[in-house]
Image 1 (cartoon, rainbow, N blue to C red):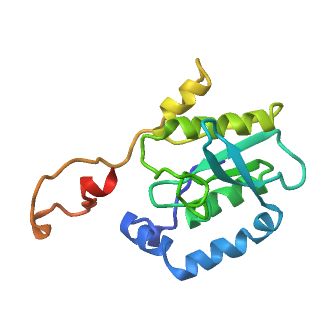
Image 2 (cartoon, rainbow, N blue to C red; image 1 turned 30 degrees about the vertical axis):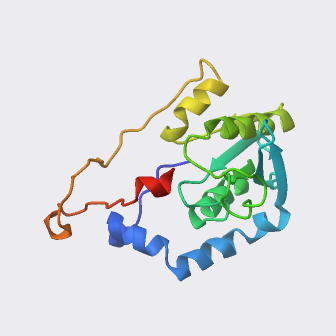
Length: 196
């Protein structure tokens, strides 16, 4: 795939964030994904220790490339989030088998497990990826995201990782009034009691 370069009028990251979550964008993504969603099916991945995760599986469109793309959503997302559907549709149209994984308690999976989701449950993600590998052993498994580096390395020791430079910088600004934060600041707020 080629590098993404947005049109000049929407190159600003804030505008892209706003436009990406509009009803018009969601509608366009869902319309583009209609063919893929029509052939997608729900599957339950046995991740070990009684844990089951919900997977949306889309067999390749047309001629298969012999590759499986496993997409794992971000915090508060699901396999049906617009960014997941947009990425999945593009890969599916390119001949990939696409597996969209719902983490525990995301999407329609709240009833599958008794314990709650938290960000340290990597074993079950590894279990789900192994489940996918066992289902399609002759296909090349494609995973992505810097946050998945340790998971990928534990699944495939000696794997070659390709990195791209980060174009933004995250930092802790401490306790400040909103009016005193530098421009283009992202604000992430949560209570530690709500996280664990």
